[in-house]
Length: 417
Image 1 (cartoon, rainbow, N blue to C red):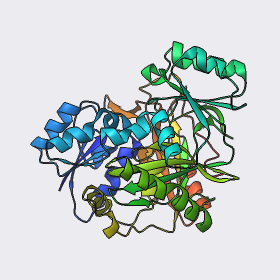
Image 2 (cartoon, rainbow, N blue to C red):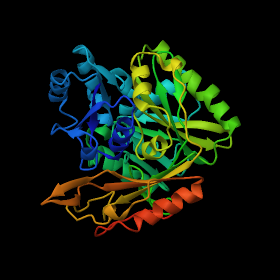
Image 3 (tube, rainbow, N blue to C red):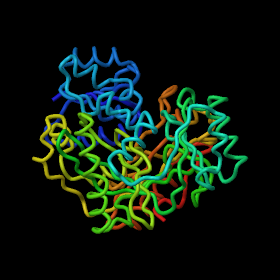
């Protein structure tokens, strides 16, 4: 089989690794890929937003399945464009992608199908938002409606910081058009958790659980990032909690998708807050999460290609997914200054010193310059390890991190705590 993986981050590197392990030995292409992916797949210099070029490439190379990693091409309609040419896609169509592309759309969906979530209000007028400051008390959750690379959420502790956040989003266009509309939410307390699910027309099947760390600094301090690390399985997931998530969230979500005629084929990422009242939905994403994917797929024992093919062909109920009992831990090494402005082009050393077969270094933002591996993004590497339990997985991950060096590298030391 010929497979095209769209994207060039650590998530796509993890997908490529798992597909490369398939007994069916598919030919892998990645657009645009990265230096790590290049060891597993043939990288193609096509940007993930260049839909026309990607469709032409897929058609010319007789691609059997296109796997879409990032959210932007999905919200742009890459799946619709591929399907029009008769090419199968693991990734939802443009209509389904609104579940990530618009927070207001998702909140309305959750409310309509009685899926537990925070109370909310939406605004398109800046003065009206400012007048609403404190409507749910403080802290006040302020979200840009559109895509903002995981950074469009501000937890304002007081009226002054709320006003600043609103000005940044709506007047200063900090997140571009994503801030044309704002969603204000009730602040939820509890423990965050990630639930990734394979979804086809008639089935929703959760993967193993994970815990993500969004803030840049330890003890959840500082601004939100795209994710500074994960571990799997999540320590707070019990059989009772999993049963509640299934009955209160997964089943009504699938019912809603059917009733709204949202023909979903791919991964639905559900960000949860486990509150005293039970699980509540914080957000939906319509693709593999990053860096959750690195930890979760590292524990998958089934053939990912078979699963993806089943999703595309509406045969997910025919697949039984097997998982390792081991735990996994992913530590993100980021550039100095991230999630703000950061410098690119700093040489990365030490990856070749890692020989443990239970450790894998996923490339997130890297490039080759003058024959050297250098930093090329905010999040640079996802150092991921597997162990008999979380403590052993953490020990291996941090031991590997200590062997890798680039100027200004920053990472959280509390991943897994």
